Image (cartoon, rainbow over the protein chains, first blue to last red):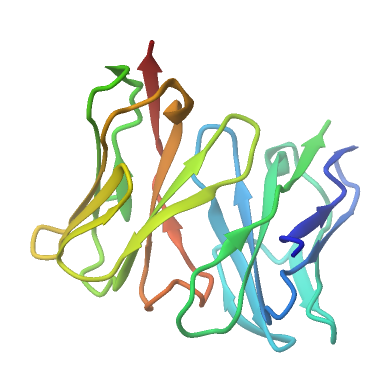
Length: 113
Length: 114
């Protein structure tokens, strides 16, 4: 079975631009979470979606938004990019809101120049 | 006070030794605790999770939880050079962490010397 898949794997953007990152969860998983990992730090929670509804939001500015589609895939959008948004963006999926552990995709490396 | 604290290391152990990784957390309402391994340039990989006080063993790995002391640890027996990675401790307020809101520490870098 395929794991969590993310695209693109690497991208470079300029300050002020917008970026969209995509994630497909493990088959059968209905919950998708997004994390940001800055170099040298642990992942930091951004959003969680379950059954297309936002179930949790971390301490990130409104420039960050996300959505989940009927097939449970998800997109993370970041507007007005800043240099500090350069990070590894991780998508994780789980089978449900309660119980069961989450599994991470390989991530999308974003560099803002 | 940071919610999840780990010694950033690097922790260096010889091959075959026991590596001991420690983590403390501040929220007494935390219910589940996770250890992830992250190789350089890769995503975190789940090693173990633990919900109850005491020890949980899986192969060469043992997780230990003490909720009264708000302390969780990971022991790696017979350490191998392939265990060299950053180990991330994560905490969740729900069982399983499937609500997605895991709180991670900064990670401890482990180096196993041949």
